[in-house]
Length: 135
Image (cartoon, rainbow, N blue to C red; front, top):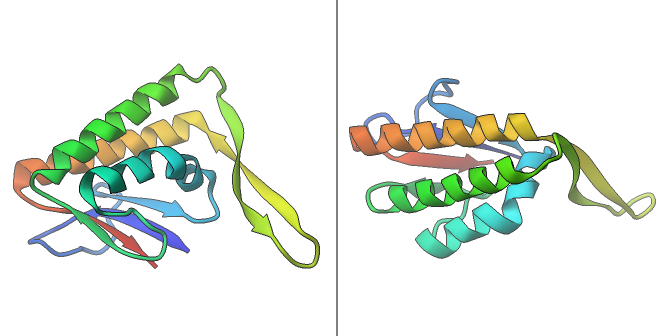
């Protein structure tokens, strides 16, 4: 399970390009850290869910809404004193029930969110879309 966020080219999703794309893995802490806050807020504001299993698109009037939410998330993240912390990413059921946690590194998530903002700005300036592709 993974998610790729890309800047469209001619309205379509291009081949992954690190300059205009971000990759989030379902087993990583960043997606699950953002889920209860930023991702749910984006869904409430735009009707689109950034999901590990499905696709979402942002364009036009939705881009500034998403940008605002990401900026607020970045500000909250900058206020955190910890450089790294544990995030709950799931529950193992077999062979023994066990909660699963992964480390989240603050500077890595800040870098991804800044890159997400850059992709949204490019979409706005070029009249393209931001496409989130879940597998």
